[in-house]
Image (cartoon, rainbow, N blue to C red):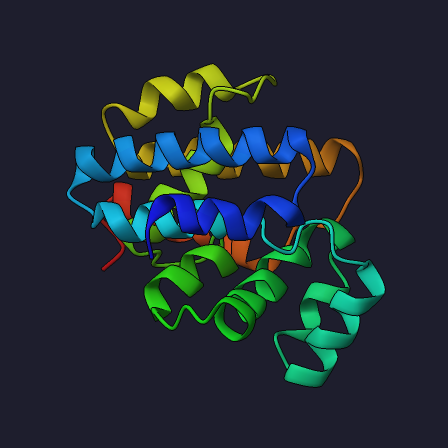
Length: 191
């Protein structure tokens, strides 16, 4: 699928602000893909569709998760996470994208997961650091990403968990597991 076709498909599903965010994620993902040797076309398509379900009704997403068994645990950890697994499902079944690497990158772009692929890390980080993002800690991650993707993932996962803990919100288990796995890798204890 060509870039313009993908953008035309996704645009009606997003607000103007979220569409601008998507363009920022796309540009960042392509840049990161070049940096680390990930397939740029996969990064482009995954980034364009990463928020495909962002504005679907929450109840529709809850129903889809239950009916298609997309991970009932998503229902416990807050509505902000729902669009990732539902987006991956709808991108496959409505848009027709069957590339499992792209779909997995969409599914885990909000939470991360242990043993993320390079494409998953690229989309996870591109969503976090795209130029339209402005929040404490983002500059540190932008600097880290130029040198080491794993270190940048650790920082973004840490920042996310601290943010959630300060608000006394639940931390999704895969987020903590991704952090632990990357720390073990850095310390030479992981595989």
